[in-house]
Length: 74
Image (cartoon, rainbow, N blue to C red):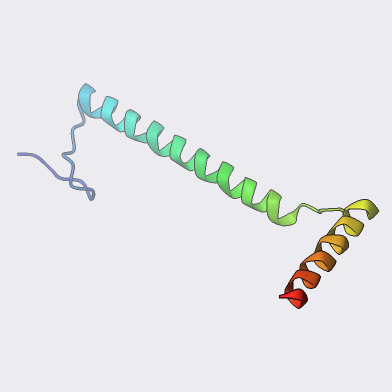
């Protein structure tokens, strides 16, 4: 008689079951670590301060002015 676990797999407490449990644990551990890394990167991007130099601001103003002139000219 075989017991089924909540995920539908057979429960085996022998060596093969222990090895399968360990593999599943390591897989879940790796997935969790990857998710934590992605979440950390999202937070870093969200919370990082961006700073622009005066030259960057001037270049952006110039681009906006050219774009507005193109829009008005058409």
